[in-house]
Image (tube, rainbow, N blue to C red; front, side, top):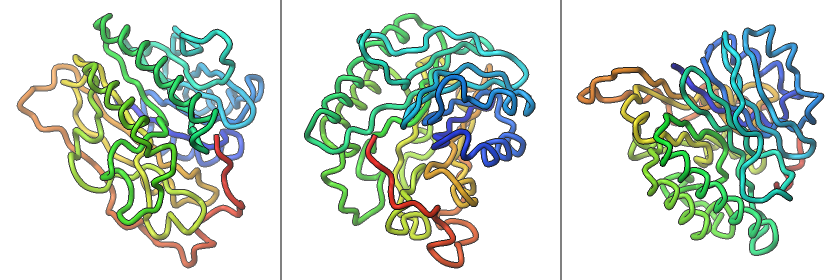
Length: 294
């Protein structure tokens, strides 16, 4: 099973990019984040024409999550993260596909910090940790995929950065992510590549993409039993370099039933420098003044 996660950063604006990627890569299951589309505006007809069924939780602004499955329909199990009945932000959806439970996660950004947005981020993280513990206890195969808005360690951001005040790098944020891992979850991409650059996000401002100043924000966490089936994975960096691209690149893994424990999993990451460096920074980045905090 080939599994992908992609913060598409506006599913309708980047529908052509999404469909081209689906045609080229044909993942079996896709977790999408930051749809920026209310429930009735999700492009389900185009998604179905591409061979995928979907469940989604749409919302205007910066939120919205979905799970797509090729050739079968995801069976939804949750459309909200439990723990706060007053939270109306569309940041979590859960569905079963092929005997595996998938969650598409769009964890709050938390900037600026300190402040109410950072408080909400940490509270949301606590709810995720609590719910994830119940999934581990259930003993079912689970993939928690998405944009966690967490840079887990200094190895997950470009060297020489000046992002110390960013909510994504705060000690509380990193500690929460580690407590999640301590439940028994496997960080799939870091398992495949324990060291070195593994960026999944390059901001639009300050020529981050052409200068390869990236961060690792998008993660697959695998439940204990499923981690033994991890065969390969990677980051589709080329998608970030396309016209009108999201500021995230898709990530993917492959899991196989009965994978021998002695077989080392494979990582498939394109070269460190972006392939086909744009002629100019302006050609690489959409004409946007910036991206507000979420």
